[in-house]
Image (cartoon, rainbow over the protein chains, first blue to last red):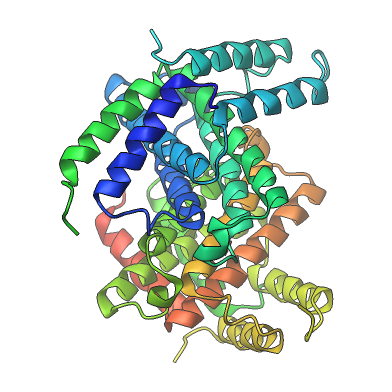
Length: 108
Length: 108
Length: 108
Length: 108
């Protein structure tokens, strides 16, 4: 059971999308992990020469381009998790709990 | 309005987590995009020398390590989207619709 | 002293190139490391859906595109090393020696 | 003919290193490009939370760690270029010439 309805729905639709195009043979976890990092780089690219301050104040057009790259990363992440039977949101919650214990508040 | 309850809840909790540790000053979109690709690489690493076939049949222990890296990618993606006011699921749905039109089924 | 004449010459020319354009203010090591990984992703992209076998037999045109991405990675690597006073070839030789001891021949 | 003696020597030695361990079967261009970006991420990691200014003034120990990651990137880049018959330095010089024409000095 996936704890997250929207991501589950997205996973189902992505699976149908891939099957209708005979793409599952390309979608090995290895390839999906490669595709994901390629999209992560496209997400980093608009920020690479900006100052941190500029990156906090993106003009609307640039922000929209970034939104689309975020979407691409999520689409491959959902497909990879789906291929491996991973519940993304449950894993993220678990990891956040680990981090909450690992980095107690108020320490540098 | 975010269309995805679980990701929204995650975003709220991540925001509290970061604030309690005085981390928002580090969490510029530029830095979050860097952190995301570093995690995307940790997600690719276990696959880099596997064949595609092997990547489809990960042993349980390796699969769990991959699940944690997937979580890390999602956590930074949610924080980056949150910092920029991006609705991740809505953007992913929109991008998938674009791809459905762009790549009609049955073509190579 | 840099042990490698060609890379040294490249570093000098890249430094002149950047200075003539007033780019050194953008070329912090942090930004150069980001630019490098963005190029590394462009280098990975042409391979992401190929089989390993196909990647060993690239058509000439695709091979040339890959050659240009290799060049981009090297150009940023040389600039980053130069900014930090790192002798790339000496470090690579040292690392290779470490690997030679760390992975004795004939073991899995 | 490779224009760069040190990189050529490195390529020869890397080839011997890989053959002695029966690794060429793992070293498809696809896999080498994946390994390269994983190393590029390890090179980015020490910078991800630093300011640009801090990245220009790395303490000696951290600088040495970065030097080793630079070496790892170069080692995979040399192997990938070698596998595809690419002359890295010649390609980098050609790309730099293109950039010199593409970005005339004195323009923003």
